[in-house]
Figure 1 (cartoon, rainbow over the protein chains, first blue to last red):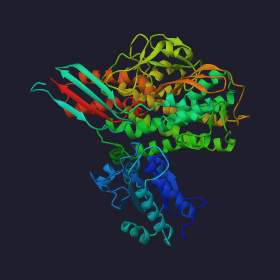
Figure 2 (tube, rainbow over the protein chains, first blue to last red; figure 1 turned 120 degrees about the vertical axis):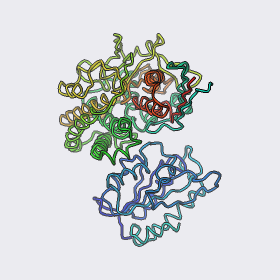
Figure 3 (tube, chains in turn red, purple; figure 1 turned 30 degrees about the vertical axis):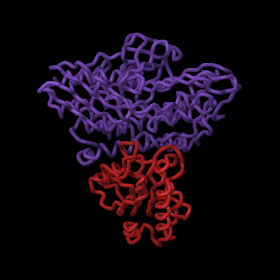
Figure 4 (cartoon, chains in turn yellow, blue; figure 1 turned 45 degrees about the vertical axis):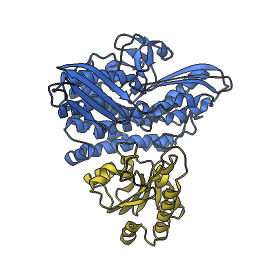
Length: 173
Length: 431
C-alpha cells in the first residue's frame, strides 16, 4: 500500500469516517475508517463536528469522507445504496443529504465552509451510504454492512487509493 | 381566523440544537396566545442513573450534550463530592476551571461566530458569512480549535471527555502539554477582542425586557464552577437551597419541564445574567472593552447577549492562559475516600447558564435519586415571553421580517435544545 499511515503532517490523503459508532447505521463511517486503518491506510473516525473536519482535511491533497445518509427519495427501499458525491457545489448535497447529523455545522456545512475559505483538499469525494436504522447499538444493518465491506475491499485493494484514478473509480461503486 | 389573519411558519429553525415549535396569535399589536412547544421525547437520564454507582454519573450525564459535556461532568462531580463530603484540593479545582474555560470558548465561538452573527448581517448562515467576512469566520474557527484543544489535552477528547472523574482526573496532563496551549490562548484573546469590535458594529434591535437575572457569584472570580446563587432581585443563597427557590413545571404543550421561581416567576440564566450580576468580577480592562462595545452592566436587551457571550470568550481565553501559566500537575490527580450515604448538590455555569444537579447516594455508593435542571429548561418560559415581547415590539414588520426577528430572538439564548428541545416551527396567527 503506497499510502501508509503518516507519522505526522498532512502530506498524504486521508479517509474520514464520519458518524457515531454506537448509533447503528450512523456508525458506517467509523466502521469503514477503522477497517481501512487496519489495512494500513491513513483513515480516522470522526464524530462530525464541522470545524474538526476542516482541520483534518485542510492542506491535504486528497480526502475521502464516508458518512451515513438518509434516503434521498421517498419510499425507496434503498438501505445500503452508495451515493458518491463529487460535485460538492450541488445544493442537494449541501442541504439535504446528511439529515442525520445532530450538529448544525456538520459535514455538508464543513464542505461549503471549506470551499468559501479555500480550505478544501485538491480532491474531495464524499461517500454517503443510505442507512436503515439509527437507534442505539453498534451493529450495522445487513445491507449497510455489505456496502461497507464493498467499499473497504475497493479501497484496500487499490494501489493508490487517494490517487485520481482510484478516487474516480469510486463513482462506479 | 379572519380574512386578515396571517400565518408565519418556520418548519425548521436552523442554527440551534433541538426540535421545537412556537405558535403565536396576534390581535392588532397584542399577542393573545403563545406556545413554545418542545416535542423532542424525554431522555430519561435521571431514571437511567438510579441504581448505578455514583462514579458513573459524570460519564453518563456528559452524554446529555455534545456541546457542553463539561457542564454535566462538573455538576455531577460537585454534587457527588458534596454528597460524599469530599474536599477537593485547589490544584484539581484549578484544572477543572481550565478545562471549563475550553468548553466556554468552543461553545461560545461556535454560536457567536457561526450561528448567531449571520442574523445581524441579514445572512442565511456561516457559509454566506464566510464569503462576506472571511476573517471573522476564520477567527471563530481558530478560537473553536483552541477551545477544543484545551478539552482534548485535559479531558482526552473534546466531545464527551473521558479523563474526568468524581474526585478529580484519572491522570494529570504533563506540565509541558498545558504550557504548549499558551500561544494559541494568547492569540485567541487578541482575536476575540477584534471580534468583539466587529460585533459592536452590528445593528442591535431595540428591545428591553424586564428580566429576573439568576447566576452564580463568587467572592473574587467571574463565576464558572464555584459560588453562591444570586439574582437581580437580591436573592443570595447556597447551592443546596436551589430546590427551595426554583421549581420545574410541566406544561401541556411541551415535553420539557419549564423552570420558574418558587413564586411562579420566569427567570433568565446565561451570559447576560452572568455579566449583569458579575460585571465587577471581570478584569477592569475587559469590562472596559465590554462598555466600549455597547454592553454596560444592567443591559436588558436580549439581542446584546451576543456581546456578553463574546466578552466571556475574551475572559475565558485570559483565564485559561493564567491557569496554564500557573499549572503544576496535581499530585495525586484525584482523591478517593470512604463512602458515606448522603445528598449532594452541584451547580456550575454552563455556557448557556446555570446547570443544577442533585443526587442522593446510598451507603454502597448506588444512586438513589437524581435531578438535573439544564439551563435551557430554566430559560424556556423566558424564551416564550421574549418571543411575545419581540412580536409585540416588531409587529409592524412584514411576516418574513418578523419571522426572521423571532428566530434571531430565540438564538439570543444559544438554546441547547438537545438538552431540552430540537427544530422550531413558528406559527404567527394575526386577527
